[in-house]
Length: 455
Image 1 (tube, rainbow, N blue to C red):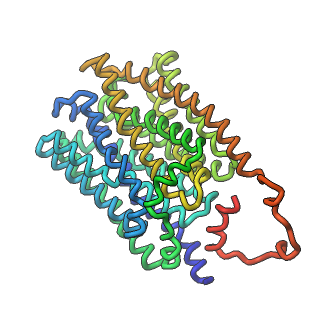
Image 2: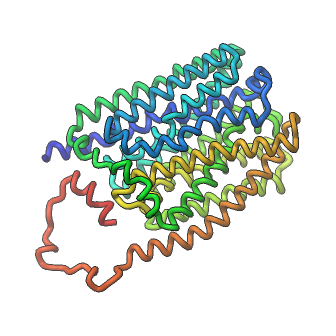
Image 3: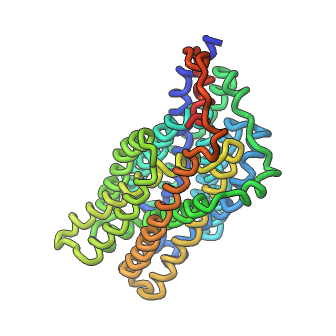
Protein backbone atom coordinates (compact mmCIF):
# COMPACT_ATOMS: atom_id res chain seq x y z
CA UNK A 1 0.00 0.00 0.00
CA UNK A 2 2.86 2.41 0.76
CA UNK A 3 4.28 1.95 -2.73
CA UNK A 4 0.81 2.54 -4.18
CA UNK A 5 0.46 5.78 -2.18
CA UNK A 6 3.85 7.03 -3.32
CA UNK A 7 2.95 6.18 -6.91
CA UNK A 8 -0.32 8.08 -6.55
CA UNK A 9 1.36 11.21 -5.13
CA UNK A 10 4.00 11.21 -7.86
CA UNK A 11 1.55 10.37 -10.62
CA UNK A 12 -1.08 13.04 -10.08
CA UNK A 13 1.07 15.86 -11.48
CA UNK A 14 1.73 13.90 -14.66
CA UNK A 15 -2.01 13.20 -14.81
CA UNK A 16 -2.74 16.92 -14.37
CA UNK A 17 -0.53 17.74 -17.34
CA UNK A 18 -2.01 15.06 -19.60
CA UNK A 19 -5.64 15.79 -18.69
CA UNK A 20 -5.27 19.52 -19.21
CA UNK A 21 -3.15 19.10 -22.36
CA UNK A 22 -5.71 16.89 -24.07
CA UNK A 23 -8.26 19.73 -23.76
CA UNK A 24 -6.00 21.85 -25.99
CA UNK A 25 -7.97 20.75 -29.08
CA UNK A 26 -11.25 21.84 -27.46
CA UNK A 27 -10.07 25.38 -26.80
CA UNK A 28 -7.99 25.66 -29.98
CA UNK A 29 -10.49 24.26 -32.49
CA UNK A 30 -13.43 26.12 -31.02
CA UNK A 31 -11.95 29.48 -32.00
CA UNK A 32 -10.16 28.54 -35.24
CA UNK A 33 -12.52 30.56 -37.41
CA UNK A 34 -12.09 33.82 -35.48
CA UNK A 35 -8.74 34.93 -36.99
CA UNK A 36 -10.06 34.31 -40.51
CA UNK A 37 -13.54 35.77 -39.96
CA UNK A 38 -13.12 38.49 -42.60
CA UNK A 39 -12.04 36.06 -45.37
CA UNK A 40 -14.89 33.70 -44.45
CA UNK A 41 -17.47 36.52 -44.48
CA UNK A 42 -16.24 37.68 -47.87
CA UNK A 43 -15.59 34.31 -49.52
CA UNK A 44 -18.78 32.63 -48.34
CA UNK A 45 -20.91 35.81 -48.44
CA UNK A 46 -22.16 35.43 -44.86
CA UNK A 47 -23.93 37.82 -42.51
CA UNK A 48 -22.71 38.21 -38.93
CA UNK A 49 -25.61 36.05 -37.72
CA UNK A 50 -24.66 33.26 -40.17
CA UNK A 51 -21.03 33.41 -39.06
CA UNK A 52 -22.02 33.25 -35.38
CA UNK A 53 -24.16 30.21 -36.22
CA UNK A 54 -20.94 28.31 -36.98
CA UNK A 55 -20.12 28.72 -33.28
CA UNK A 56 -23.57 28.29 -31.82
CA UNK A 57 -24.32 25.11 -33.74
CA UNK A 58 -21.13 23.54 -32.37
CA UNK A 59 -22.62 23.45 -28.89
CA UNK A 60 -26.09 22.17 -29.78
CA UNK A 61 -25.11 18.51 -29.08
CA UNK A 62 -23.83 19.61 -25.68
CA UNK A 63 -27.37 20.51 -24.64
CA UNK A 64 -27.98 16.76 -24.21
CA UNK A 65 -24.79 14.65 -24.45
CA UNK A 66 -23.17 15.68 -21.10
CA UNK A 67 -26.08 14.05 -19.23
CA UNK A 68 -24.89 10.71 -20.59
CA UNK A 69 -21.32 11.25 -19.34
CA UNK A 70 -21.82 9.23 -16.08
CA UNK A 71 -23.24 6.27 -18.03
CA UNK A 72 -20.40 6.47 -20.57
CA UNK A 73 -17.85 6.60 -17.76
CA UNK A 74 -19.39 3.48 -16.23
CA UNK A 75 -18.96 1.68 -19.55
CA UNK A 76 -15.63 2.94 -20.92
CA UNK A 77 -14.16 4.72 -17.85
CA UNK A 78 -13.04 8.34 -17.62
CA UNK A 79 -9.88 7.84 -19.65
CA UNK A 80 -11.84 6.05 -22.39
CA UNK A 81 -14.38 8.88 -22.64
CA UNK A 82 -11.57 11.45 -22.81
CA UNK A 83 -9.97 9.51 -25.68
CA UNK A 84 -13.27 9.16 -27.58
CA UNK A 85 -14.13 12.86 -27.14
CA UNK A 86 -10.69 14.07 -28.23
CA UNK A 87 -10.60 11.93 -31.39
CA UNK A 88 -14.13 13.08 -32.31
CA UNK A 89 -13.11 16.74 -32.02
CA UNK A 90 -10.04 16.03 -34.17
CA UNK A 91 -12.25 14.46 -36.83
CA UNK A 92 -14.52 17.52 -36.75
CA UNK A 93 -11.47 19.71 -37.41
CA UNK A 94 -10.58 17.60 -40.44
CA UNK A 95 -14.14 17.76 -41.77
CA UNK A 96 -14.21 21.57 -41.33
CA UNK A 97 -11.08 21.89 -43.49
CA UNK A 98 -12.67 19.62 -46.12
CA UNK A 99 -15.81 21.80 -46.10
CA UNK A 100 -13.68 24.88 -46.76
CA UNK A 101 -11.95 23.04 -49.62
CA UNK A 102 -15.33 22.17 -51.17
CA UNK A 103 -16.57 25.72 -50.45
CA UNK A 104 -19.67 24.35 -48.71
CA UNK A 105 -21.16 26.37 -45.86
CA UNK A 106 -23.69 23.60 -45.13
CA UNK A 107 -20.96 20.97 -44.83
CA UNK A 108 -19.06 23.31 -42.53
CA UNK A 109 -22.13 23.49 -40.29
CA UNK A 110 -22.23 19.66 -40.22
CA UNK A 111 -18.51 19.56 -39.43
CA UNK A 112 -18.95 21.96 -36.53
CA UNK A 113 -21.79 19.82 -35.15
CA UNK A 114 -19.50 16.78 -35.38
CA UNK A 115 -16.77 18.71 -33.60
CA UNK A 116 -19.20 19.62 -30.84
CA UNK A 117 -20.68 16.17 -30.13
CA UNK A 118 -18.31 15.47 -27.24
CA UNK A 119 -16.77 18.93 -26.80
CA UNK A 120 -18.38 19.87 -23.49
CA UNK A 121 -18.43 16.21 -22.43
CA UNK A 122 -14.64 16.25 -22.76
CA UNK A 123 -14.47 19.06 -20.20
CA UNK A 124 -16.87 17.26 -17.85
CA UNK A 125 -14.75 14.09 -18.06
CA UNK A 126 -11.56 16.11 -17.52
CA UNK A 127 -13.01 17.73 -14.39
CA UNK A 128 -14.12 14.36 -13.02
CA UNK A 129 -10.71 12.88 -13.78
CA UNK A 130 -9.01 15.63 -11.78
CA UNK A 131 -11.40 15.03 -8.88
CA UNK A 132 -9.98 11.52 -8.57
CA UNK A 133 -6.46 12.87 -8.23
CA UNK A 134 -6.97 15.96 -6.04
CA UNK A 135 -8.82 16.88 -2.84
CA UNK A 136 -11.39 19.71 -2.86
CA UNK A 137 -8.92 22.42 -1.75
CA UNK A 138 -6.28 21.18 -4.20
CA UNK A 139 -8.91 20.88 -6.94
CA UNK A 140 -9.47 24.66 -7.04
CA UNK A 141 -5.80 25.09 -7.94
CA UNK A 142 -5.72 22.10 -10.32
CA UNK A 143 -8.78 23.30 -12.25
CA UNK A 144 -7.21 26.75 -12.64
CA UNK A 145 -4.89 25.18 -15.22
CA UNK A 146 -7.94 24.77 -17.46
CA UNK A 147 -8.28 28.51 -18.19
CA UNK A 148 -4.49 28.54 -18.48
CA UNK A 149 -4.73 25.91 -21.22
CA UNK A 150 -7.66 27.84 -22.67
CA UNK A 151 -5.61 31.02 -22.84
CA UNK A 152 -2.47 29.26 -24.07
CA UNK A 153 -4.28 27.52 -26.91
CA UNK A 154 -5.96 30.75 -27.97
CA UNK A 155 -2.64 32.62 -27.89
CA UNK A 156 -1.32 30.05 -30.35
CA UNK A 157 -4.50 30.42 -32.39
CA UNK A 158 -4.32 34.23 -32.36
CA UNK A 159 -0.72 34.26 -33.56
CA UNK A 160 -0.56 31.14 -35.72
CA UNK A 161 -3.78 31.29 -37.78
CA UNK A 162 -3.48 34.90 -39.10
CA UNK A 163 0.16 34.32 -40.07
CA UNK A 164 -0.62 31.06 -41.86
CA UNK A 165 -3.44 32.73 -43.78
CA UNK A 166 -1.21 35.71 -44.57
CA UNK A 167 1.36 33.37 -46.13
CA UNK A 168 -0.94 30.99 -48.02
CA UNK A 169 -4.01 33.23 -48.60
CA UNK A 170 -6.15 30.10 -48.31
CA UNK A 171 -8.86 29.29 -45.76
CA UNK A 172 -8.52 25.58 -46.61
CA UNK A 173 -4.76 25.37 -46.00
CA UNK A 174 -5.10 27.34 -42.75
CA UNK A 175 -7.72 24.91 -41.44
CA UNK A 176 -5.68 21.84 -42.42
CA UNK A 177 -2.77 23.23 -40.40
CA UNK A 178 -5.18 23.73 -37.53
CA UNK A 179 -6.11 20.03 -37.71
CA UNK A 180 -2.43 19.01 -37.57
CA UNK A 181 -1.88 21.11 -34.43
CA UNK A 182 -4.97 19.57 -32.85
CA UNK A 183 -3.46 16.08 -33.11
CA UNK A 184 -1.27 17.06 -30.12
CA UNK A 185 -4.33 16.51 -27.93
CA UNK A 186 -4.99 13.11 -29.51
CA UNK A 187 -1.46 12.06 -28.52
CA UNK A 188 -2.03 13.27 -24.95
CA UNK A 189 -5.40 11.48 -24.75
CA UNK A 190 -3.83 8.19 -25.87
CA UNK A 191 -0.98 8.70 -23.40
CA UNK A 192 -3.39 9.37 -20.51
CA UNK A 193 -5.50 6.33 -21.39
CA UNK A 194 -2.52 3.99 -21.06
CA UNK A 195 -1.01 5.99 -18.18
CA UNK A 196 -4.10 5.47 -16.05
CA UNK A 197 -4.46 1.85 -17.14
CA UNK A 198 -0.87 0.70 -16.66
CA UNK A 199 0.81 3.04 -14.22
CA UNK A 200 -1.85 3.67 -11.56
CA UNK A 201 -4.13 0.63 -11.32
CA UNK A 202 -5.17 1.54 -7.77
CA UNK A 203 -6.59 4.88 -9.01
CA UNK A 204 -8.52 3.08 -11.71
CA UNK A 205 -10.17 0.83 -9.14
CA UNK A 206 -11.18 3.85 -7.05
CA UNK A 207 -12.40 6.01 -9.89
CA UNK A 208 -15.41 4.15 -11.25
CA UNK A 209 -17.95 4.78 -8.48
CA UNK A 210 -20.08 7.12 -10.59
CA UNK A 211 -23.81 7.39 -10.12
CA UNK A 212 -26.23 5.66 -12.43
CA UNK A 213 -27.69 7.79 -15.21
CA UNK A 214 -31.12 6.51 -14.11
CA UNK A 215 -30.95 8.81 -11.06
CA UNK A 216 -30.05 12.00 -12.97
CA UNK A 217 -33.53 13.52 -13.18
CA UNK A 218 -34.26 12.67 -9.56
CA UNK A 219 -31.03 14.39 -8.53
CA UNK A 220 -31.87 17.49 -10.59
CA UNK A 221 -35.19 17.77 -8.74
CA UNK A 222 -33.23 17.86 -5.46
CA UNK A 223 -31.06 20.81 -6.52
CA UNK A 224 -31.16 23.67 -4.00
CA UNK A 225 -32.33 27.14 -5.01
CA UNK A 226 -28.84 28.59 -4.54
CA UNK A 227 -27.54 26.03 -7.07
CA UNK A 228 -30.15 27.12 -9.64
CA UNK A 229 -29.10 30.76 -9.14
CA UNK A 230 -25.47 29.67 -9.62
CA UNK A 231 -26.49 28.08 -12.92
CA UNK A 232 -28.18 31.35 -13.94
CA UNK A 233 -24.93 33.19 -13.23
CA UNK A 234 -22.95 30.57 -15.14
CA UNK A 235 -25.31 31.04 -18.11
CA UNK A 236 -24.83 34.82 -18.14
CA UNK A 237 -21.06 34.61 -17.62
CA UNK A 238 -20.80 32.19 -20.56
CA UNK A 239 -23.15 34.32 -22.67
CA UNK A 240 -21.10 37.46 -22.02
CA UNK A 241 -17.72 35.88 -22.67
CA UNK A 242 -18.54 33.78 -25.73
CA UNK A 243 -20.69 36.43 -27.39
CA UNK A 244 -17.66 38.70 -27.38
CA UNK A 245 -15.08 35.97 -27.96
CA UNK A 246 -16.86 34.75 -31.11
CA UNK A 247 -16.17 38.04 -32.96
CA UNK A 248 -13.11 39.27 -31.09
CA UNK A 249 -10.74 39.48 -34.09
CA UNK A 250 -13.18 41.21 -36.41
CA UNK A 251 -14.34 43.45 -33.55
CA UNK A 252 -10.81 44.82 -33.02
CA UNK A 253 -10.28 45.24 -36.76
CA UNK A 254 -13.53 47.16 -37.33
CA UNK A 255 -13.65 49.22 -34.13
CA UNK A 256 -10.00 50.28 -34.03
CA UNK A 257 -8.82 50.02 -37.65
CA UNK A 258 -6.24 47.24 -37.44
CA UNK A 259 -5.27 44.61 -40.01
CA UNK A 260 -5.79 40.88 -39.43
CA UNK A 261 -2.18 40.35 -38.29
CA UNK A 262 -2.26 43.41 -36.01
CA UNK A 263 -5.60 42.33 -34.58
CA UNK A 264 -4.24 38.84 -33.89
CA UNK A 265 -1.22 40.26 -32.09
CA UNK A 266 -3.45 42.46 -29.93
CA UNK A 267 -5.92 39.67 -29.13
CA UNK A 268 -3.01 37.72 -27.63
CA UNK A 269 -3.17 40.21 -24.74
CA UNK A 270 -6.68 38.99 -23.97
CA UNK A 271 -5.52 35.41 -23.51
CA UNK A 272 -2.24 36.34 -21.81
CA UNK A 273 -4.32 38.14 -19.15
CA UNK A 274 -6.34 34.95 -18.62
CA UNK A 275 -3.22 32.76 -18.52
CA UNK A 276 -1.49 34.97 -15.94
CA UNK A 277 -4.55 35.63 -13.78
CA UNK A 278 -6.12 32.15 -13.69
CA UNK A 279 -3.47 30.34 -11.58
CA UNK A 280 -3.38 33.26 -9.14
CA UNK A 281 -7.17 33.25 -8.84
CA UNK A 282 -7.12 29.45 -8.48
CA UNK A 283 -4.49 29.54 -5.73
CA UNK A 284 -6.28 32.27 -3.78
CA UNK A 285 -9.59 30.47 -4.33
CA UNK A 286 -8.17 27.26 -2.86
CA UNK A 287 -7.23 29.17 0.30
CA UNK A 288 -10.47 31.13 0.72
CA UNK A 289 -13.44 29.71 2.58
CA UNK A 290 -15.79 31.78 0.41
CA UNK A 291 -14.87 31.65 -3.28
CA UNK A 292 -17.86 33.69 -4.40
CA UNK A 293 -16.01 36.98 -4.01
CA UNK A 294 -14.50 36.32 -7.43
CA UNK A 295 -17.94 36.27 -9.07
CA UNK A 296 -18.69 39.76 -7.75
CA UNK A 297 -15.28 40.93 -8.98
CA UNK A 298 -15.96 39.36 -12.41
CA UNK A 299 -19.36 41.04 -12.77
CA UNK A 300 -17.93 44.43 -11.80
CA UNK A 301 -14.99 43.88 -14.17
CA UNK A 302 -17.29 43.20 -17.13
CA UNK A 303 -19.63 46.14 -16.49
CA UNK A 304 -16.70 48.48 -15.83
CA UNK A 305 -15.04 47.42 -19.07
CA UNK A 306 -18.02 48.42 -21.22
CA UNK A 307 -18.71 51.57 -19.18
CA UNK A 308 -15.20 52.66 -20.13
CA UNK A 309 -15.45 51.63 -23.79
CA UNK A 310 -18.92 53.09 -24.39
CA UNK A 311 -18.87 56.25 -22.27
CA UNK A 312 -15.27 57.21 -21.41
CA UNK A 313 -13.06 55.99 -24.26
CA UNK A 314 -9.58 57.33 -24.83
CA UNK A 315 -8.72 59.17 -28.04
CA UNK A 316 -6.00 56.57 -28.52
CA UNK A 317 -7.43 53.41 -30.13
CA UNK A 318 -4.53 51.29 -28.92
CA UNK A 319 -5.31 52.14 -25.29
CA UNK A 320 -8.99 51.35 -25.82
CA UNK A 321 -8.19 47.97 -27.38
CA UNK A 322 -5.68 47.03 -24.66
CA UNK A 323 -8.06 48.01 -21.82
CA UNK A 324 -10.92 46.05 -23.39
CA UNK A 325 -8.85 42.90 -24.05
CA UNK A 326 -7.04 42.81 -20.71
CA UNK A 327 -10.18 43.42 -18.62
CA UNK A 328 -12.12 40.73 -20.48
CA UNK A 329 -9.21 38.29 -20.07
CA UNK A 330 -9.17 38.92 -16.32
CA UNK A 331 -12.97 38.58 -16.28
CA UNK A 332 -12.79 35.03 -17.62
CA UNK A 333 -10.02 34.09 -15.17
CA UNK A 334 -12.19 35.36 -12.28
CA UNK A 335 -15.07 33.19 -13.49
CA UNK A 336 -13.48 30.00 -14.78
CA UNK A 337 -11.05 29.27 -11.92
CA UNK A 338 -13.60 29.16 -9.03
CA UNK A 339 -16.81 28.16 -10.86
CA UNK A 340 -16.44 24.37 -10.67
CA UNK A 341 -15.11 24.36 -7.09
CA UNK A 342 -18.27 26.31 -6.19
CA UNK A 343 -20.41 23.72 -8.01
CA UNK A 344 -18.52 21.05 -6.06
CA UNK A 345 -19.38 22.78 -2.77
CA UNK A 346 -23.04 22.90 -3.71
CA UNK A 347 -23.25 19.23 -4.71
CA UNK A 348 -23.41 16.02 -2.75
CA UNK A 349 -20.76 13.36 -3.28
CA UNK A 350 -23.21 11.10 -5.14
CA UNK A 351 -24.60 13.92 -7.29
CA UNK A 352 -21.36 15.58 -8.35
CA UNK A 353 -21.33 14.11 -11.86
CA UNK A 354 -24.87 15.34 -12.50
CA UNK A 355 -24.10 18.83 -11.17
CA UNK A 356 -21.09 19.09 -13.49
CA UNK A 357 -23.00 17.70 -16.49
CA UNK A 358 -25.82 20.21 -15.96
CA UNK A 359 -23.26 23.03 -15.62
CA UNK A 360 -21.81 22.01 -18.99
CA UNK A 361 -25.29 22.05 -20.55
CA UNK A 362 -26.02 25.50 -19.09
CA UNK A 363 -22.77 26.84 -20.54
CA UNK A 364 -23.71 25.37 -23.91
CA UNK A 365 -27.08 27.14 -23.78
CA UNK A 366 -25.19 30.41 -23.31
CA UNK A 367 -22.89 29.62 -26.23
CA UNK A 368 -25.70 28.47 -28.54
CA UNK A 369 -28.25 31.23 -27.96
CA UNK A 370 -26.56 34.49 -27.02
CA UNK A 371 -23.99 34.91 -29.84
CA UNK A 372 -26.86 34.32 -32.27
CA UNK A 373 -29.02 36.89 -30.49
CA UNK A 374 -26.14 39.38 -30.43
CA UNK A 375 -25.44 38.85 -34.13
CA UNK A 376 -29.12 39.13 -35.08
CA UNK A 377 -29.54 42.29 -33.00
CA UNK A 378 -26.45 43.86 -34.55
CA UNK A 379 -27.55 42.88 -38.10
CA UNK A 380 -31.05 44.31 -37.54
CA UNK A 381 -29.62 47.71 -36.62
CA UNK A 382 -26.41 47.99 -38.66
CA UNK A 383 -27.06 45.62 -41.58
CA UNK A 384 -23.91 44.85 -43.59
CA UNK A 385 -22.21 48.00 -42.28
CA UNK A 386 -20.89 46.26 -39.17
CA UNK A 387 -19.57 48.68 -36.55
CA UNK A 388 -20.45 46.64 -33.40
CA UNK A 389 -22.13 49.55 -31.60
CA UNK A 390 -25.32 47.50 -31.16
CA UNK A 391 -23.15 44.58 -30.07
CA UNK A 392 -21.70 46.73 -27.28
CA UNK A 393 -25.20 47.65 -26.11
CA UNK A 394 -26.20 43.98 -26.04
CA UNK A 395 -23.16 42.96 -23.99
CA UNK A 396 -23.60 45.88 -21.59
CA UNK A 397 -27.18 44.78 -20.84
CA UNK A 398 -25.94 41.23 -20.15
CA UNK A 399 -23.30 42.70 -17.83
CA UNK A 400 -25.82 44.69 -15.80
CA UNK A 401 -28.09 41.64 -15.52
CA UNK A 402 -25.32 39.37 -14.30
CA UNK A 403 -24.23 41.99 -11.74
CA UNK A 404 -27.77 42.18 -10.32
CA UNK A 405 -28.11 38.38 -10.10
CA UNK A 406 -24.63 38.14 -8.61
CA UNK A 407 -25.65 40.37 -5.69
CA UNK A 408 -28.66 38.13 -5.01
CA UNK A 409 -26.52 35.00 -5.36
CA UNK A 410 -23.96 36.36 -2.86
CA UNK A 411 -26.61 36.61 -0.12
CA UNK A 412 -27.99 33.14 -0.90
CA UNK A 413 -24.56 31.54 -0.95
CA UNK A 414 -23.52 33.14 2.34
CA UNK A 415 -26.74 31.86 3.93
CA UNK A 416 -26.10 28.37 2.50
CA UNK A 417 -22.55 28.33 3.88
CA UNK A 418 -23.80 29.36 7.31
CA UNK A 419 -26.46 26.64 7.40
CA UNK A 420 -24.00 24.02 6.20
CA UNK A 421 -21.43 24.83 8.88
CA UNK A 422 -23.94 25.12 11.77
CA UNK A 423 -25.09 21.89 13.53
CA UNK A 424 -28.87 21.51 13.37
CA UNK A 425 -29.24 19.84 16.80
CA UNK A 426 -27.34 19.10 19.99
CA UNK A 427 -26.97 15.47 18.95
CA UNK A 428 -24.95 16.51 15.89
CA UNK A 429 -22.20 18.12 17.97
CA UNK A 430 -19.06 15.95 17.91
CA UNK A 431 -18.12 14.12 21.13
CA UNK A 432 -14.38 14.10 21.82
CA UNK A 433 -12.79 11.10 23.52
CA UNK A 434 -9.22 10.60 24.55
CA UNK A 435 -8.76 7.87 21.97
CA UNK A 436 -9.92 10.23 19.21
CA UNK A 437 -7.09 12.64 20.00
CA UNK A 438 -4.39 10.04 19.36
CA UNK A 439 -2.50 10.69 16.17
CA UNK A 440 -3.40 8.16 13.51
CA UNK A 441 -1.42 7.56 10.32
CA UNK A 442 -3.26 8.73 7.23
CA UNK A 443 -2.32 7.48 3.81
CA UNK A 444 -2.37 9.67 0.71
CA UNK A 445 -5.35 7.80 -0.72
CA UNK A 446 -7.32 8.01 2.54
CA UNK A 447 -6.63 11.70 3.02
CA UNK A 448 -7.64 12.43 -0.56
CA UNK A 449 -11.08 10.88 -0.14
CA UNK A 450 -11.71 12.06 3.41
CA UNK A 451 -10.79 15.73 2.96
CA UNK A 452 -13.85 16.82 0.92
CA UNK A 453 -16.11 15.14 3.52
CA UNK A 454 -14.34 16.97 6.35
CA UNK A 455 -14.77 20.30 4.58
